[in-house]
Image 1 (cartoon, rainbow, N blue to C red):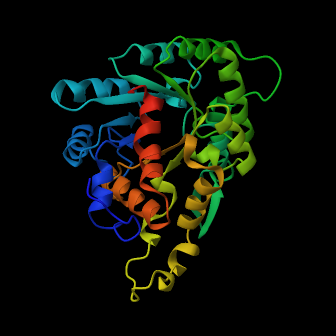
Image 2 (image 1 turned 90 degrees about the vertical axis):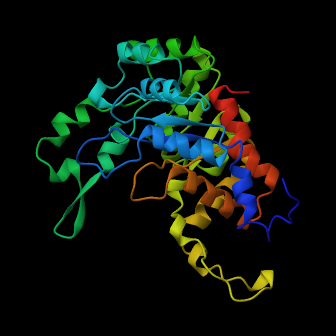
Length: 330
């Protein structure tokens, strides 16, 4: 790697060089429902990642077992290794031990079991339709949604006995030290409870997913990091187009930050800085074609971290070292 003063090298070769060895542990790459915007396919993303020098990617599949996707990609691409995870979504009956057991034994690359995404109870309560110019939660706008979907959505009991299905799933993950448990799109209190139950069950690696992490206070996140829990932050959350596009003055102190300070990016960056990068895993959550490719999302994220004064070592820690620890690639 060339020698740079990180601030002034942030938007040229340095971000591309920092892609080399990085790992994107949160990639969505088809197949998806016909109602979804188009996605890059899994082989396209893997080829782009390999060509940019990434070390690996991990597929998420909202509708299936991504470890099977990884197996197919790895059969096709002999010079790049991918991994997959499994989301306990309602289309597979939520906390279904049989589905989890299948995922853990499908192909050879299952590295993550997640408590679901858009159909957790917390998420399903908030997802909304646009009605007469206003956002209205599905539960209020769609007749029967409460009975059909909320009743089957994943909820984590905050106290009392642990359901048998949940206990069985935790025990299965504990038996696989290469696999990590992902809190998914649950509420903040549920995420804390999952961590408590997972560590009691002997699970070595837990990731608090980016939607749940942002519901926790800085002190709660610091406490989790001290316990060895990984904290996720994704490019999809920071609103990349809000980054500054042009500066007029050469002086560092005369760089207009208005577009970032008043956008999501500043809050996203400050959250990482407040907690500290030691247990952060940065990923994109990209793959949909109305966004940049996951590789471009990772490059953009690295550029922004450098822009706001994160060191090269901190960037590597969050985009390469910690993801490798999480996936078990050390």
